[in-house]
Image (cartoon, rainbow, N blue to C red; front, top):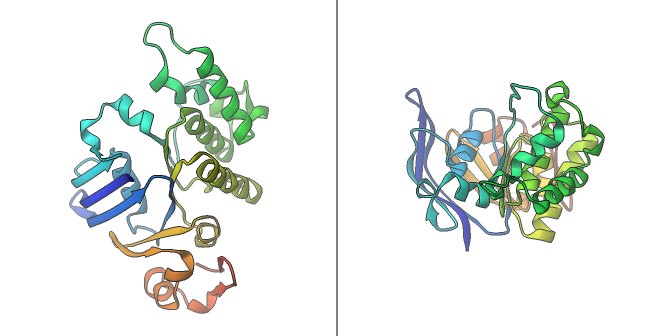
Length: 256
């Protein structure tokens, strides 16, 4: 069963095309990375998958239903999003930010229940940010803030998780820890994971399916071993294929 599907989706910003007639089906329980050069349409595609892109043409289906026909609460219960950057305009403790992930489930009159508080505590422990509890989220580094947003999405407990460059502000240790967490959510709990990644090596190592975007279109879709060919690296990423080192397992990329 498909979790998210795009049918003939196009998107333009101020008259400039970002996506052109994209068809994409992602089945429930898949782990998919969206990769490609800068300006290829990766984040635009993710915004379409999340149902927040303005001026989109074509259909976006979430669990088989048109996403625009679902309530905001209905979408939030099915889909969690971790943005690349998010401003926090007022003083908010870390645990309060994480608790925002439980808003779709809170009782309209009685607020958070014990199950919500347990979910928040579990998400904080799982992402490894217990040491940040009590701090003002505005005072965190960009990497720490990224982990808080990830914990918020984990607390949300949706079956589909979209992430826009989840490792961009993280050091190497936290990059690997974040990828391990996504693999665990996917393999142990069946969460569908869709992530925009700039690091091709990281994507190839942790994701069994890659979707390569180039100039608003899907240039390749498949396993890392099948699609990361010399020709694709040369034509899409614009680098010498000699910078790509193939191993028996994942593909390791040098200068891409």
